[in-house]
Length: 362
Image (cartoon, rainbow, N blue to C red; front, side):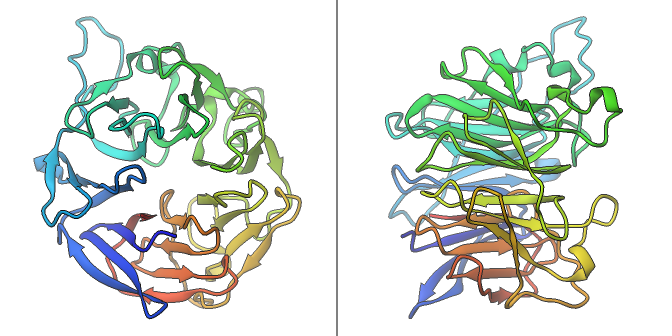
């Protein structure tokens, strides 16, 4: 079981660790700087933190296992836009929105999803990055649109633990894309997803989908869960076909999703009111859990604020430890909670931390 956890926030990176069996806040890093993403690499114990420094740009730092000092590494860089290009996007890095480790057989390989919608690969632990041009140039990318940001972004990167060349990514807004050859070519997945915000004739258009977050079950890799703008979906064929979960209590709208590391039938979600309010239903925070593949979902509230609560959980604001029962959740209002029993009860870690962008165990 991972003995540490991390919070990437508007004002720094914070560590958590269990002390006499109770998780508590510990050291901080990059205090005052926005940390948009954090990755704990299970292959070598390295920790990565992506910083979004506004005028000073995007930075990426790595803390090697056993080290006391962070090392600044490279960041993704877009090529110059060709003369005469009709692409309306600026080919300039806005933010690192997702980070993922490559497979166990790919030491040093990292993936990064960015705003404005580029996927990058590093083969040297982040020292250098290459744009995955096959996806950037894929037919249909010109139809991607902003979802939550003004520009498209890749927020979910799911590497298949059985085959490192098989990778699935989620785009807001641009659907679900899959490669089986390490990124040399891509196919559009996501059949079955439905974009309720589109005109009826376009609601099942796979390019129009806004999957808020996609996660893969490591122990059952063909099983993926998606918290979509318009509901919750599940796939059991590696993201090609998706089935809607119709029984979500309170609301099917939300951003965060986590899946049990071994049991593909068990997943957690955080409901919100769509679309303008984006607060917990009835201003009471809850986490919904299914243990039967989405046939039923139960709302869990014990230990969570139930009155005058306006906390929103971002896409990467919910994570489950590799023990399958310890969960960590952080909100836009600086609330942080931890559950040691699969969400049945939540311990308050803090109520006045900076807004939380991402949480991770490692």
